[in-house]
Length: 212
Length: 343
Image (tube, rainbow over all chains, first blue to last red; front, top):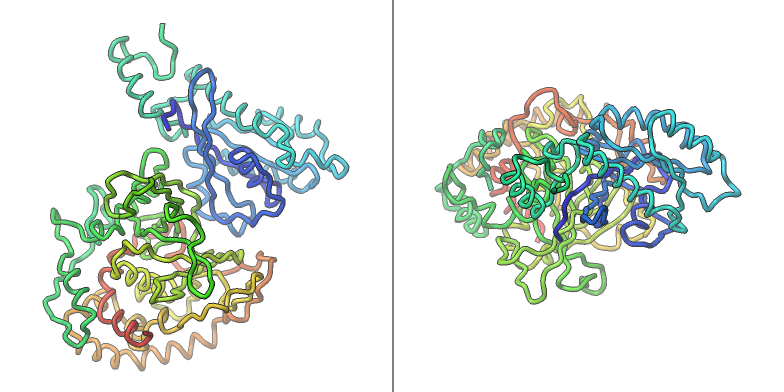
C-alpha cells in the first residue's frame, strides 16, 4: 500500500510490562492475556493518517529480558520513535527507565521521539507508580508521556499516533533530515516521485513541505 | 550459491572448486555434481539464485530500503509450509499462506550465520508458489528476527522434508519445505542444521574453549510435551564420524578437498583421529554437559554461557568464510553418506 512516509518505531522496556500486548492491540485491536517471551525482535506494521498523509508505522517489538536481547544496536539504528514502557504495578520497571533511556540515547539518533508509557492502567488497585511520577520523569528527560492499558485499549491508539504526530511535526520544522535514512524516516515511493517533481519545478523545495 | 552482488567484499573471497570426478559410488551425488559444476565464476549464472535460496524474496525484503537490515550479508532462504503432527503431516494454514525462513549474519564476515529470519507469505489466488522469480511478487511480511543461539533447528522428517524449529522459550514449529523446491534445497537445510549443531573446523580449534552453538537445552522437556513425540533420526542431523574428525582437524580447504579425492578424505581421517581423540578426552573433562542444564522457565542461567568467536556480534577480526560458501563447499559426499546412513 502506498504511503507518504514510513516511520520506524521501537518498543523497549523491562520484560512483562506489556510491550507485545501494546503492539498487538495497536495492529490487531485485540488483547492476548498470555504472551510468550519475546526473543530478538517481532514486527508489526500499521498505516495511519496524519495531516491527510498516509504514514506507515513499522514497529519493532524487542525482547525485554536481558538474556534475549541480542544485536541491540541493530534494533535502535534508524528508529524515528521509541515507546519506552513500564508497568504501573511494578516499581522496579519504573526504576529501570534511566538505564533504558541511556541505552536508547546511546544507540539511536538524537532526534528520536520517545514516548514514555505507563502501561496496565486498568490495574488501578495494584498501582505502585503514581501518574505524577511518570509525568515528572518524562518532563525531566524531555519525553512525551501517557498511561495506557493494552487490555482495555485505553490510550493505545493515542500513544502510537501522538508519537507519529511529534515526528511529523519535526519533519515539518526541518529537524529531521528525511533524506537521511538513519533518522528512521523513509519517503514512500509515490511521495518521493512527487517530491522529486516538485523539487525540479520549484527549486528544490524540501520533501514533505507544503506546496504553495 | 556463491555469486555475490557487487560490493559484498566478504563473499567475493570465497573459492570455487571445480569438481570433475563422477561420484559413481554415490549415485545420489551425481545430481549434486551437476549442480556443483554450475557454481559460478563472476558473471556466470548463480545457481543459488536459480534454486531460489539466494537473493530471494526474503533477502530482497530485508535488504530493501524499508528495512535495510544486514545489507552486506547474504541470506540463505526457502519457502516453507507450517504443518502439525497427525497421522501424517497436516497443513496448518491455507495453501496460499506459506512461511519464508532464512538465515543470515548480523556481521557479514562471521563464519556462521547468527540470525534467523521468519516472514509470512501470502500468495495471490491461483498463483504458482515458485520461490524462484515468481511472475508476481506475493505479499511478504517480516514477522521475526531470532538470534540463532536462541533457536534449535532439527531435521524432523527427511522424507517429508520437515524441519523442527524450537525456541529457547519452548515454542515448537514444524515446517515442511515447499514442494516447489527441488530436493537439493532440502539437502542444504540438512547441511545447515549440521553446521549449526556442530560448528565447523574454523569455528574453534582449541578444545579448551567451550563453544555453545545453541543455547536451547538438548533435553527436550517441552511444556507442550510433544518434543519427543515425533521420531527424529539423530543420524540425519549428526555428521558421520569421519566428518567429525575432518571438522576437528581440518582447515576449510580440507572440506573442499573432499570433492577432489575421496581417498584423501580417508587419509585425512586416519591422520586426524589420534589428535581428535586426545582433544575429545581433554574437553570432556573440562566442559560441562548441556544435558545437565535444567529446563526451566527461569531462563536467566543462559546468560552465563560463554560464546565462541562466531557467535559474537562484532568479532575482533574478520573471519574468512561465510555460511553459503561453506555450504557449497561441504555439501557433497559427506552429505550423501549421511543420507545413505539414515534413510
